[in-house]
Image 1 (cartoon, helix red, strand yellow):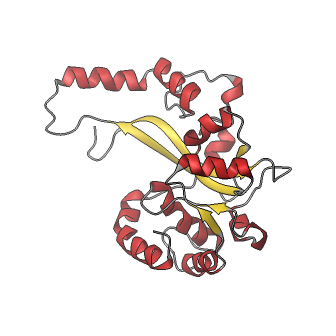
Image 2 (image 1 turned 60 degrees about the horizontal axis):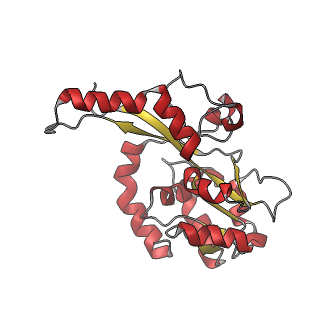
Image 3 (image 1 turned 90 degrees about the vertical axis):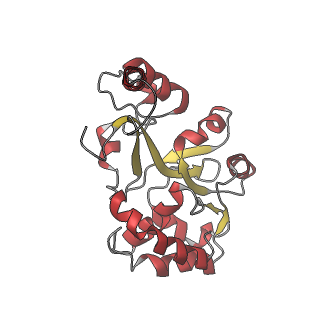
Length: 229
């Protein structure tokens, strides 16, 4: 394999969550996080979670920028802090789900797979994919240079990860999107499981992680000073 690459084992998604008891229909824009009526009823991941770094990118996009032009992001993020808009973070997923159930939390964002147990249990948590896009990310399987396990055993494990039966099981049990085109998703999972329809794939925001990794220390410093730590 080329250096720095891996086999995509599954796709996970950071989309918008909303309280189905509060909204008559799914929201369609991340701009809702800046709506004064949402003040005190918003959740967002902290910056020590991968999802926490999507907030500044969303803020930049809404301000006319992107991951390469973050200047518009910081004033918009300051608005959230000054307005005390954010109720909680997702460091405690159970607490977050209970806030949805109690009606204190109206909108948020998280890896949708983490919400499946609560949605299955009847919590009023809906999933929506805003018009500005969502974050689709692929987790991978790869042999690590210098590993001590037999190569054949590693290859068997990777093949099992990529196999259609395993990937269908991941989709059904924890809503991880398959990367194997031979997986035949049940109709009821299409539109829920990440990247399961052409429309969903088209909403993916391209992420330049090698570049973002060079910017991360500066982003962390600014976000920490603003109170997003």
